[in-house]
Amino acid sequence: MTLKKTLPLIVAAVVALCSSCLSNDNEIVTYEDAAVTSFRLGSVRCYRTVKAKSGEDSTYSFSYSATSTPVYIDQIGRRIYNADSLVVGTDLSRVLVTIGTKSNSVVRLKSLTGEGWELYSTSDSIDLSQPRVMRVTSSDGQYNCDYTVDIVAHREYADSFSWSRMPDDAAVATFVNMRSAQAGGALYLLGQTADGTVTLLRSADGGGTWTACAAPVADMTGATMAGVDGKLLVLVSGDIYATEDGEQWEPAVTPDVALRSIIGGSRSELYAIGAEGRIMVSRDMGLTWIADDMESMEYVDNTPLLPATDVSVIVTPTRTNSDVSRVTVVANKEYTGADDKHTTAVVWNKVVDAMEPQAWTYTNVAWDNYEYTLPRMEGLSAVAYADGIMAIGGTPVNNGAAPYSRMYYSPDLGATWHTQQSMNVPVGFERMKAATIVTDGNGYIYLIGSDPQASGDRCMIWRGKQNKVMWQNPQKYFE
Image (cartoon, rainbow, N blue to C red; front, side, top):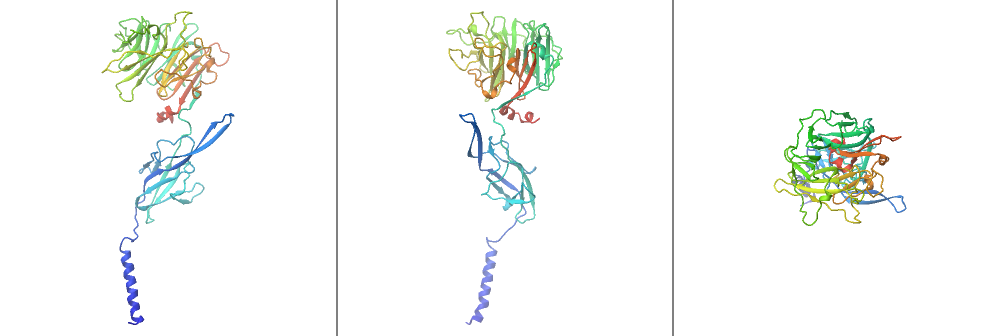
């Protein structure tokens, strides 16, 4: 067969072969879909600054994988974000990410310096130091879908603590003695002036303004108060008064026994100090009282260490059972005269469990040379804060430290107490002659102090926050 006759056959065979290939798996198919289906962070760089031995700042860096950090895709709002911020010091300007798309959509990012678009590549890092617009284009080139990528890192350390000064209050500046409580989202301050005048103040705006209440208190001698289940309870002349707003007071409840002070409680139990110094409990909102169970005194008699003055009650729900809570009492013992050498506060604990009642136990942290104790201080007050207990007080017994110069923190319900540089009191607060500590239930802690005879600041009201506490209350934090 001649070449002239075979050439048409060869051309026909090639055409047939090409047609066969195009009709099989190698056929190019395009789609109209455009969407991000997954967004995963990769390796990131982190920078930290520390103090060198010379006292100068020293910066070091390290890399860590952010793969386990959840990144959420809001398909309705077209937003890609991380709810849990990356650690402090993370360099978001160079982040490796892996992006999944629907039907081979093409990903581009809008330039940070102009109107152009940069093609995404798995091998190139992305600058996420600010929100980025990411455009996903369908493989047929007909449809676009824009997302805002907002990846954030903490700017402050979780355990860092900061103070902001609140406006002074003329009434607070006259107090020579004060006590505080929180109830129903409001702060209450009971104070007495040098001439004996007693005033109950209420603040519903986080210490910004204080308003005098119509309190049933004429003398602070023997008058105590506590916030319990949204109500402020005040013990005056043997009777218990309750209010939800500081103005409307419920009819007085006369307990069936004499009480020295009402100290706090939970929804199921109220606590007080009885006439004989025992911890008393009421389960009917203060009408009837009985001496609460205490640990056996068979081998060690802790009766002289019962809480007597400056009593604070901290109720902590357990994380495993909402019906069970731990109650901690922080106080000073009875003063027995000049020969009383006891230098630490007293701490008592109990577990409140309706199914298995338990007794109060004394937390013995007062042995010789023990470092982590809470000093016995005048005007001692303590509150629950930062997953622990924070306390402050006046001049310590046999210590020599300035009054109100240190914050003490216990992470273990009063077993150990620590002073931390990050929790220092505001400068100048150590000059106060009377002070108290209180929290508002929204993540803030307050130091309220006064010195009516001072030539300078006669009143100091400071509001503090620890970052990790505020992060647990994000709505309040960003208000």
